[in-house]
Structures are given as structure tokens and as C-alpha cells.
Length: 284
Image (cartoon, rainbow, N blue to C red):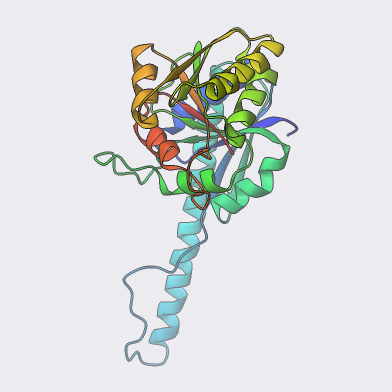
């Protein structure tokens, strides 16, 4: 799975979009795709009290029945996981990706991704998971955990896929933002796309130098980009530019240059993932 794309699928409404985003990336780069579904560690059946006074034999029978029920649930979960993976594989292949494999794993999803990401070029996940409450603007709990731990670029898919032709890079001069620009400059995924750099803050000789350095890095990679510095709150300015000019992908660092270092993900990043209607590509 060298330089492959790890795609997390869980059967949620976002799964199709994640698959289509991954297929788009695979078609442009030639990267293989690994579809991953992780079965959580089995939990004890809920709502059953085994502490009552059961006569000898009755307790044994009940425990046996519960054990059989637990095994049946685990078997059904495996069957469901394989079905989800086969459906996802069909979607990815139909979208143009050729080298596609599936993997069903047991355990913690974050630990599993951390074990696998070393050989990957990207990890793709939906903004919300299967248990998401769509009436509330919450991110999926697994997404937040993954975003805090993954070291590869993390593509957070929007609810529906749209062909990506333009990219907005939110740049603040910090280490993760510089890593994002360097990656974009080197990755064939971005060749031929319209690219714009945006720095939010007061324009000074220093901030202009930083953003021009970033543009020069992109130019060295064969990419043409415009560069703009605008005052205001990052969340508001980034969202307004993205929506007004119709960008298809937002690229940003997960660490804010001016944010408190103890916060693994800055408030700007979290807010953009929560509110942005287009996919977000994150770099740590």
C-alpha cells in the first residue's frame, strides 16, 4: 500500500462522498486505495442484570444464551462490515479508481489508522459518522480523535462530492501551513487546479513576505497561485472567500500559528471543519 489512500467507511451517509473523493484523488495520482472498516471492541449486552438470585443451572443457561447472542451479534457485525466494504469498493471502482482493496479490522479506529498510515499518502474520512445527529452542527467524535492523531494529510469529505477544480489554501505562516504548501507544490493531485493563498491579518512587510514565499514555493512546483492578505477573524474571512469565489477544496494546517500550543487543533480548524460545505484537507 505504498503511497496509498486509506479510506474510512462506516455505512453513514458520508461514506459515498468519502469514496468518490478518494477515487478522484486516486485517478489523478495513480495511488492505490485501501477501504477500511473498523469493528469496535465488543461490549457487554446492555440492560441485563446478572446479579439477581438465579437458581443453579438457570444462571448457567442464561450465561450460555447471552454468550451465544453476543457471538451472533459479532457475526452479524462482521457480515455487515464486509457488505459495507463491498458497496464502497463498487463506488470507488465506478468512479474510476482501478487498484482498490478492502480491509476489515477489529479494535480502536484511531489506533488502527495510526498503525496503517505510515505507508499512506492520505487518509480520507467523512465529516460525521454513522451515529451523527444531523440536526446539530457537531463533528463526528471519531473524526476529532483521528484529526488529533494522524500525521498524514487528512481529507475530511463534505456530504456530497463535487469535482474539484479550485483550491483555497488558508495560510498563516505556521509550521503546519508551511507543510501544507510544500505538499501541494509537490503533489500531482494539484496540478492544473486553480489555487489561491489567503492570509488573514494585518498586511505588513513581514506578512507579505511570508505569503509571497509560499507563492514562490508553489511556483517552483509548477503551480500558479494568487495571494491575498485580508483583515478580520480567520473563521469568517476564510468562509466568506471560499463561498464567494466558489472554491471546491480548503487546505489548511491543523495547528494555528498564533493559537495556544496546548490545543491540538486550533479553534479555527475545528470551526472550518464544522461549518465548511466543501472538503477540507488538513496538515499537522
